[in-house]
Length: 234
Image (cartoon, rainbow, N blue to C red; front, side, top):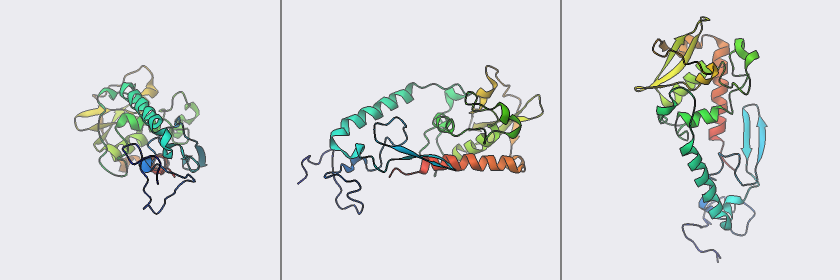
């Protein structure tokens, strides 16, 4: 007989074909898919696996969310992070009204452009930076050289159109317009300078991806994003 009693805090699904999924006498199935998986600072016992597509969180040996005595700790942890998200402010252009929702799978786990910005901040790297800017890329300026591939990835997730601002060096800086709202996830590469978003034109991936290296960088960033958001917790 289960010593904890079934309630809103605890239950065991002994009918599940994976039960017991951990070596515990009693497994709390309430958090079958761990809600703390997206967070690197979760209190569970996790490691990381390095792969070509990026770093993957490995929770194979973690039993923390499945122990009945940890129910309150899990809720406190999630509440704390939700409060941080509510209070968080972003510096990318248009962030104050960037509240768009994904258009569908496989991106439904992404809450809004700010959440996507947080995820991409771990994925932007010298390898995804435009080759001509790669030598100047750094962890302190992660968005440098990432504009077009990021904008077309944003379009995949939230829909809308990609627009471009002509720059003095002859290149174009890309950003997104969804509905009647515009935002630019990579605007911070320009520091305190604010671009003139009123002088822009629509951009098309067919034209941009005629450059094979740009298409490959877009595919690399996209694959790493999908790997990060779709990797299930064991």
